[in-house]
Length: 114
Image (cartoon, rainbow, N blue to C red):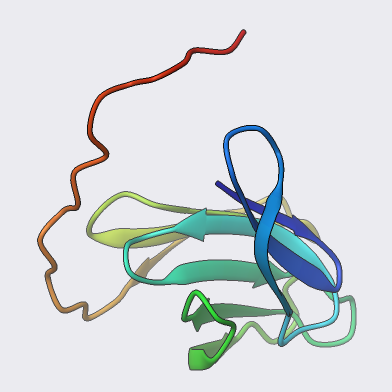
């Protein structure tokens, strides 16, 4: 599992133990999603918002500045990256050229949580 709490992103086990962490490239993480093999981070900084594509160790793959916008929340649907804008309440869709990867198997479910 992935969890963001500015200025850090954490990789967690299902019981909440921290496996790895890295500092975010932006100022304020306001959204996070995983697209295998990358993460997308919405940086909702008031001065210069951006959407970042990063590796799972925090290296920036690409950065898309969002001039005049404050990205808040981010999602990936397998083809597009979607994010909302805190400043004007719009929803945006970004087309991103991705290299397809073979999905990993997670194996059998060992526990469920409510």
